[in-house]
Length: 207
Image 1 (cartoon, rainbow, N blue to C red):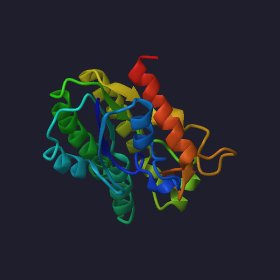
Image 2 (image 1 turned 90 degrees about the vertical axis):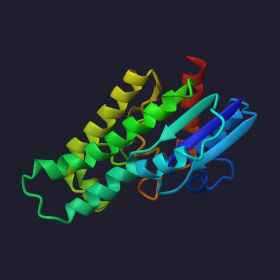
Image 3 (image 1 turned 180 degrees about the vertical axis):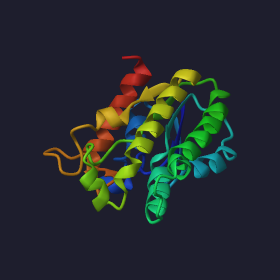
Image 4 (image 1 turned 120 degrees about the vertical axis):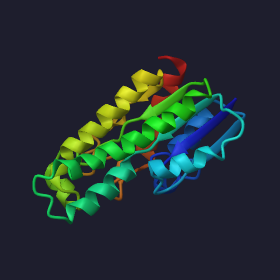
């Protein structure tokens, strides 16, 4: 079985503090993948995934995609420094651009005709906009965050992908919760990565 992982730091080992402790590595072990092609990296955006798709040779037997969160953080942080006022067009770009990319990515991944697990973006603030401000993200982007995840859910339905709703999975495990699955404000710790890998396994098994 060939497993291909695409996307950002939601999938990687580094922030877990455990070699092989990232969601993608744990999932590869859980499904006993014969070959694991890991194209995830810290800071990866949807643009980065599009670039990496060209390097995929052999079609995988299963694939995971974690992308969109860095697009949201980068765009919202950048626009948050501007006097946006009521410029809805600029606000909407925060969710529209990554979703357009994710649609293109999903079209390419559909050609592999294998199970694809696409993930929503978790909310490390557990819905607390005051924490968003501490992270440098203006509360005005809450609607765009919700639109991004709604769009990802829609892509899963349209493409027949398996949906890993990480926003729902991580609810109650934010940065100030009694049982946080987050480190460094936005990265999954080992507990978070383990929860993701087990979630993916259940989806893969059809449970």
